[in-house]
Image 1 (cartoon, protein in one colour):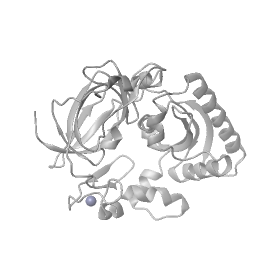
Image 2: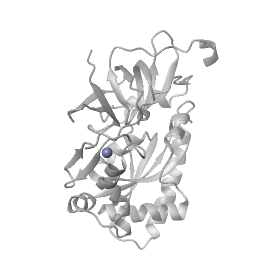
Image 3: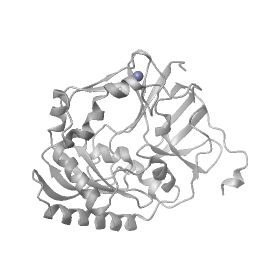
Image 4: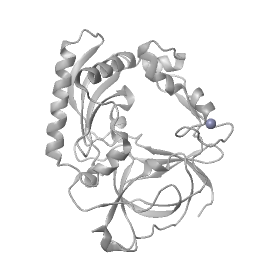
Length: 313
Ligand SMILES: [Zn+2]
């Protein structure tokens, strides 16, 4: 057991894409940062056990990103080791974070040379549907084409356009939202809640292809240049499947803002885990993304099973 205090950055799916239906993909991890700045990754594959205690000190600043090129970026530690002011950053790191500028580039916003290199690479426009039927339009850079959708926890998704760069793809994204009303974000709380009672796969598939076909129709008529319309399904990672099947499951009964937790991962969809607790057959849905910017100590901890088990059923 170690008593290193790690800052949690969140759940990341950075590995190889799932290439065929039924394959795991992305090798998802919980990314931790030691006080020295070194990163450590805890695997979240089905069957993995994880135990930690959350320090009762609120959220700390996660630092900021510096983008050097399409393939190279640095994560800079918060110099002040400050508490987080907004979300997961202090005011200073929020201002210094270059990824913030990405969203204004297509409206003529200024970017650094490194960020320009990143933005000028190929990007994809996708339509993603989540467990409750919420559907969004979104963008992914070429190298993270698959991973971005895995990180979001899409149940069904397809790519609808391949754009020459990150400027064109965001013009298309705004066009789609303006003309079809498709959102660019689905709240993470809504995603977690939907996993308690996911809609049937076939129904989600029909919803997704309906929206995607409407978007492709719109794209075929636009005067925007620099992209091609495509119809390419996203292959979802098999380690998420157990979360999308019908079955009885419950909201994890403890807050991840503090306390001791320990469980086995049964499945993972984006940052949402299906967890098995010792001493009960019930399974629980929890959003591990809630740990981001929290400080944890790893250890052989075990989550308490809710005392009145019947109340779960
Ligand atoms: Zn900071």
